[in-house]
Length: 149
Length: 73
Image 1 (cartoon, helix red, strand yellow):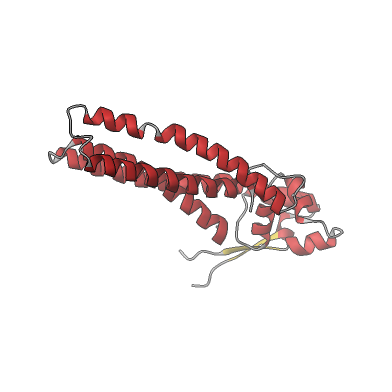
Image 2 (cartoon, each protein chain N blue to C red):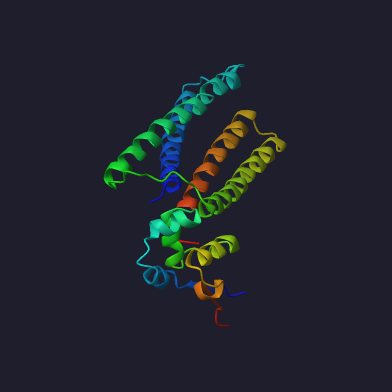
């Protein structure tokens, strides 16, 4: 497994952990009526904004740990951190998948608003389909790494 | 349109070049060892540029390294 594939696994695991945690948190807060006030969207934004730093820190920590563990497990004293045309091609395919999924989410949210739906659900649809887009990109990349292309 | 397959003789050429390792070939052409493994196993079709780089590494014409098998039908 090369450096970029390991990083894709880290990104997938981080994504699942962070999205899972924040989805649970938003659902619990919604259940408790914490978004019901006039400043509901502000409370929601302040909550989900934490996804970004948490995701960045977790990705950095896991990337370092996984690459150290891989170096020890493979007894590789000269680890290769290069990314080549194969990584770039898979990354490009992953980006297309992410764009498709996020576009579907954005259209669904706009449709919901156009039909008179509430902004709270629309923002959640956008946020979590963007997260799903990132996960689908990682899954597709890993599929290509494993199966070949 | 049915998809054809790019096959190669990299394994044999490495053997003929003093059992050149996949890592050595990877370093020579500027890709990761995993990419050489994937190309050798016909699980990845390299770009034209990389295909030429590999042929140059063995000092043989491109057609001696890669060939294209058209899918039947």
